Amino acid sequence: MTHLIRSGCLTHFAEIARSVGVDPLAMLRKAKLPLTAIERPDLRLAVTNVRRLLEISAAESGVESFGLRMAGRGGLADLGPVALIVREQPTVGKALETLSRFLPIHHDGMRLTIERHDNTVIVTPVLPGRAERQATEAVVATLHQVIRSLHGPDWRPLEVHLMHSPPADRKFHLQFFGCEVFFDRDIDGVVFAASDMEQPVPHADPDLARYVQRRVDALYARRDRWDAKVGGLVRELLSGGDCRIERVAEHLACDRRTIHRRLAECGTTFSEIVDTERAELAARLIENPATPIADVAERLGFSAQSAMARWFRRRFGCSITQWRKEHRPAEPLALAGGGSS
Image (cartoon, rainbow, N blue to C red; front, side, top):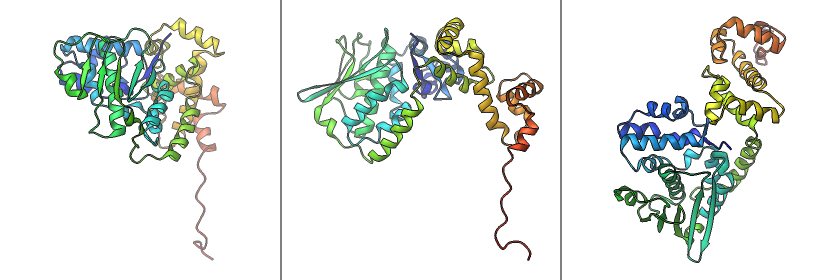
């Protein structure tokens, strides 16, 4: 099964890559990730490719703590829509429970377990498949940053546990987490005082949290369906002018036959999804009469303006000029008393 993660996880990748002497674009190419992944936070990327990116970058830079360094630049905001719900919860405990529930919106293969043991709590990210050192440390570090952002900059965990072997130099890990870091353990996780769960989240607004939660629930209700996954990617890729099925397959770490088969199970086809998404985008772009038709054709991925004109007539039953006339905004009414008597 292909698991996907928001490209927001790579928000700070380019910055860290350059700081350790590697070319971020070259690393993206080697990992078979789109170059736009570091600019557009809501693309859906194959988890396996993101993991490969971190391992390649660490190997080529010779920096064992690459994943840790990248996650250290981020925090709650990198989780996108999930952050909007989490940060408005009344306590840290409620925030973490909410994060556990909505985490699949950001990373659809990851789970979060929260276990209480007398006076301590351990929060463990459960990752799909075999996650190597860089991906594991990036996830644990992100979890640490999220909890810290809810508490405040002075918060520190009691311990951090990692299943893999220790690096040659542990100094960066100790400095980053501010506590003892244990390697070769049975789990990957963050251990902290149970009393921390009752800590109020500053400036939280539970009413706003409920409102955002309803909106996010509605927005992501279909996130597990393949037609929704492909539709989201098509919507993102259209404006870049490269919306071929091969490109979508690259994002999903599969082949085109898998996409065709999965979409057939959903009762649709790749061509139908592209046509629908293109029509919605076209209606928005053409609505503005100041937008040149040639620009619209390029945004929609057409090789020529004439090709778009033929497609538009078939799809909408009229020419672009006619459509614009029929959908022209109404002229503003004259102010009362403003005319001559």
